[in-house]
Length: 474
Image (cartoon, rainbow, N blue to C red; front, side, top):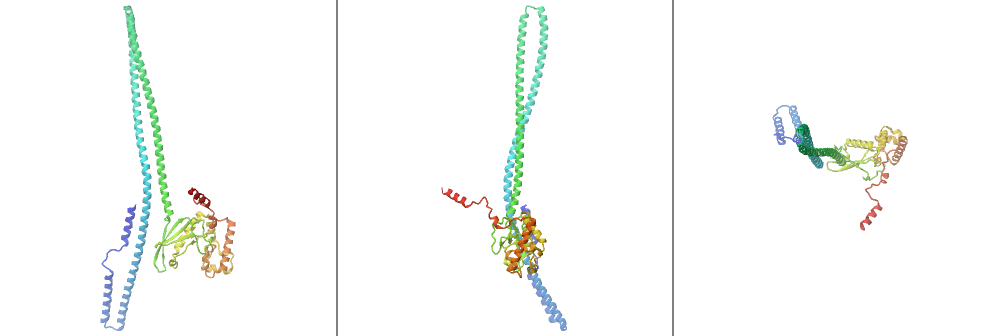
């Protein structure tokens, strides 16, 4: 992203910078001088009447004037080009600072993402091992079942053979008993021995079947344990993914807070003229918290909305700052630099008024409602004397909002306004505000006195400071 931005900026600079041309200033100056000399030679050699000579002299003077105006035009274009290059260099410096901030955020984010990715990879490896163990247990279980089934079939076949042999032996014994009754006892003992051996083999088969059952139960237990570990691993992976998503969201929030706290959120650039006629770039930045900003001079607590936790700065290209505060009637209050006051760009004031009204609408809805109602209310609602009303209208004040936006020191700058009229207008405005609050509800407190009663938890009072100092000595 940084390389693309740098490439686009270099391309822009190449389009602004003039290319090489053979028609230099010396070339054009010599050409103009040669043309004028040719005209002078023609005038000298002219044999006509005075009208012809005068017409040729007028033509020569016109060409000389045209050459001079072209020189002035070229000088003006060079000044404009130099101003544009200065602005682009400033923008390039701001871009470098922003890129460094973004790189710092990306490095912190990469650290969190790398740790989360390493944890997920380790869990995935463990999960793969558990799955291999599960497959192995399944194969052992199937092998045990197959062995058990084979043993059962073999034992069943052996039992069948034994039963057949027993029947055959019984039949042979019956026939033998008939034929050889003397040896019957000896043959019976042999048969009893064979039966004992068969019973011992049956007991061994039963023992093997029991061992196979125990192995099968153990395999089932291991299988259930592996499944539980697998479920736990899946839950851990989901938790890590959620933490990674929260970290990404937090990174975006921190980036937005960085832009807001540094005044770059909504930064706007305007151009105004100095008293010497030079173009000066002015940047408007919005900052939080204005309660600690002191206001000196003839201003009073009625002039500034101290409850509005915002202030603004108008920063010139020469790094001179003009701090801007908001009045309860939405007007910007600032000490305008003397060399900018004569040709001040009114668009800057309009932009500041828009920012102040937007902040008041969010933080002081009642004050904002009174401001909107004051824009629609005519001067007649103040019930002023004819003299005071004519003076205000002569100074371009048409509504209650226009009168409320006048700061205390600005009354002295109104043409035809003295101390008596100032007091009359101020009292009438206070009466109108009180009547509006009775009809629409109390507005938010905007004076400094109430705000100073609120103490921050991070600031110790005198008693706490005294105790801490005594504890440090002991």
